[in-house]
Length: 103
Image (cartoon, rainbow, N blue to C red):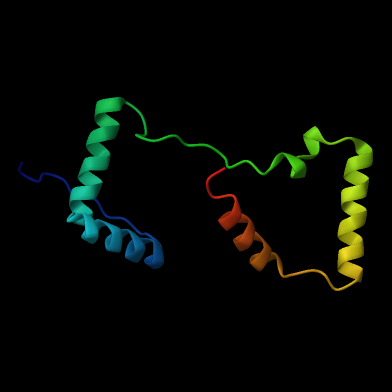
């Protein structure tokens, strides 16, 4: 197939590097992978995979908690902070993402 268009992208260097490593292991170039992706969009008339917001576990969903449960949860958090049982937000969210990656 003759190439008739150019696509210029700016992407995070680490994302690009990680994708290239996977594509290389699959025997695909970045161009081939993007071509496959765009063809699938054209064939399906949609993004070829589900897009959704990740959900936290139910025990952290305040919509499912009573007011007393929320207060108790917050009180425990305050106690943890006051007793030095806390961690930087970046570390917490990295751990949270790892633990709930497949939820």
